[in-house]
Length: 410
Image 1 (spheres, rainbow, N blue to C red):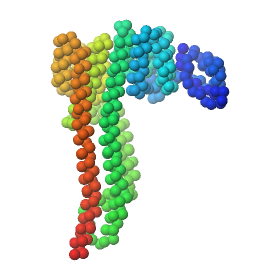
Image 2: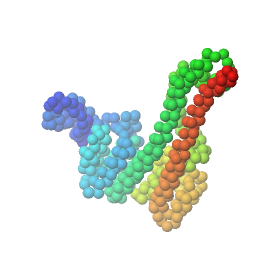
Image 3: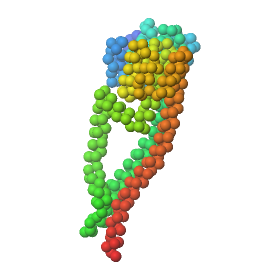
C-alpha cells in the first residue's frame, strides 16, 4: 500500500485535504466517496519524496524532498520508541505515529515509510528513502537495533539524543536572539539619525561661509550618501551576502572559511567545543547501539560542521583502521581537547568507552554553555559602549561648528 494526498469537497462544499493509504488512486477515490466526499484531486504522496531517496535505492535527492524539523523528529522518535516498547508490530507503530501528527507532509512521509515496511523491508531501508530527514547516524542506529533485536531500547536512546540536540539548539538560538536584536536596533537608530536628524541640524551650517570642522564634513558626506545613495549600499550588502553564501557551498572555499575561523582565539574555542562535543556524543550513542567503531567514527565525523575538524576526524578513523588505539589517534590531532583524549584512554583501558565518551560530551557541553554565557554577558556592555560612541561622534560633529560660531561672535 502507498500513501496518497487528496483534495475533496464535503457535503457543504468545503474543500478538505488529507492523506490516505491505498493500492491505487481509484481505491482512494472509492474511500472518499464512502465518506461522503467528492474527490477533486488524488496524487501519490511519494511523488516528490521519490527525488529524495538515497544512493541505496538508486534515486537522486531532490529540492522538494520532505523534511522534518528537529522538534518533529524528536517527537516522532519518542512516539516510535514508546510504541515499539509496547510490542506493537512495526507497521502499526508507524501507522499510529502518522495518525498522531496533524501536518500532512509529516503524515505522508511516515506512511511512505510504513508502506516500505509493510512490503517486507527493514525500517532502516525504508528510512533511506528520506536521507535529508533521517541522517546517516539515525539510520545506522536503527539498523544496528534491528539486527540486534533491540530496536526499542535503541529508539529510546535515539529519542534522548534527538531531544538533547533540540534542547541545545534552542538554548543557542535563544542566546543569540538578544544580540541580534541589539545590533539591529543600534543600526536602525544610527541610520535614522544620519538620514533624518543630521541633515536638518547641519542645514544651518550650510548657509554660513565658514569652514566646517573635518568631523562635521565627514558626517555631512556620510549623511548625504545614506540619504541619496543608501539603496546602493543596501543592494551591495545583499549581493555580498548572496555571493558569500554561494561561495561557502563550494567545499574548497568552505574549508578555507572554517580554517580562518579556527584562527580567531575566542571563536576557535567555541567552534571546537561545539563540534567535539557533538562528535563524542554521536560516537558514544552509536557504539552503545552496536555500530562498529570504524563506521561509528565515519558517521560521527560527518555530523561535525567545521570541514577542518571533519578532516581531522577522517584522519583519526584512518589511523584506527591501521591499528592505532582511538586515544592515540585523537592525541595526534591538534583539535581534540586533552580532557577528551584522557577520558577516551581511560574508557579503552576499563572497557567503558561509550560511558567515558558520553561523560566527555557532557563536560564539553557544560564548558560550552559557560563560555557562551560569558560571551553573551560581555556582548551587552560592549554594544552599549559602541552605540554610545557612535552617538557621541554624531553629537560632537554637530556641536563643534556651534562652538566655532560662538568664538567668531565673541
